Amino acid sequence: MDEKRRQLLAGISLAGAGVLINACRTTSNRTGSATNEDNKNDGPAPGEVASVEVTATEDLMREHGILRRALLVYQESAVRLRQDASSVPLDALEKTANLFRVFGEDYHEKKLEEVYIFPVLRRSPGAPASYIDVLLAQHTRGREITDYVLSVTSADRIPSSNVEPLANALESFVRMYGHHAAIEDTIIFPAWKAATGQAELDELAARFEEIETEQFGADGFNTALKRMEEIETSLGLSNLDMFTAPAPPTK
Ligand SMILES: [Fe+2]
Ligand SMILES: [Fe+2]
Image (cartoon, rainbow, N blue to C red; front, side, top):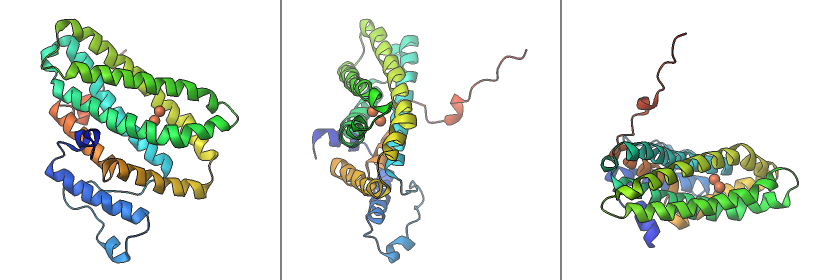
């Protein structure tokens, strides 16, 4: 296991072990190797996250869900940095950037989109091909920003001169990647699905799972999900209701 995988897997709690076990069971089901007897016991145990089979496009889109949660951490951190930089635990920000690097950039972007999705659309006539150069440039820019966030957050504290540049970098990353993932979800993935036959899509769903296992040694989605939840909890961001918008002004 290389250093990046170790970083992603590091810190997974004991409860996470149950998630991994459950995730492995789902992978077995998808590849058809599970027996009917195995399937009878597939309900999640208390504390585990229920696993479901997903198509290739659903897989890509739920990975965006993990990445959007990392963007939420970045957005909240940018606000807090400007209010009181000492209130932002740098290790939580560093863990978020590490997760984005390992799960988002090295796996989702480099192993899936840039190998299986974008080349197909480059060869296909129509509007989606015109997006590819921009999407690739945004992958590159995102990696540059992740490098910067990792370098700044590796220190014990942030010098005051770095607070505004870091907050700006986080916000610009959130703005870019929010649009990036939205275009992929609504234009790129549907176009790729339309250009790919159903039999090939089914094969690729299994192939994506194999790549995930090669990368992470287990179900990368559930591993990243657990990791994201731990980061959110450490930052006090795990209560969904705190993001419910206030009522609008009365006329
Ligand atoms: Fe992308
Ligand atoms: Fe993506």
